Image (tube, rainbow, N blue to C red):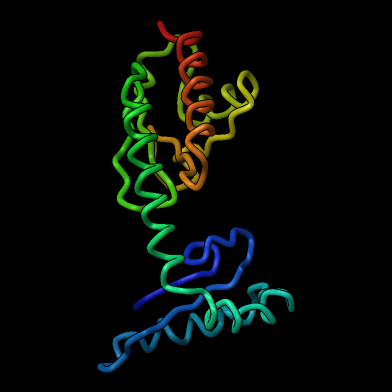
Length: 170
């Protein structure tokens, strides 16, 4: 099975248009296909603008776009990883050309933070930083950051995160 989406492959967040390719040579996915068909009947489908643009996007975006984008994401990921490593109680996970990075943090290092959700709420209130707590991904002890950004934005984030952590350490 293979999946794809405009939001990830072509970096068009919010363009809710994806696809799924199922290899079903031995009929292993028969039940899956039935359920996918039922699910597709209730999902919201892409708006007409997205439907109109899709053929042009698929046909005219050059391969060089993907190579440049992968190189940029890899560079940004390495930069963010390096910057985040210097913060006490923060342990970034090295991403390999991903648009996101999971960052672990040790809740025991903080005096008044009970979990990742509490961490995310407090840093939003105090530093205007929006993080995704890992509970939304069915995990604990992490938050997710977006890497599709400039190094200056990462610098600002690291500065705010450092200030926030310092204010909450035991």
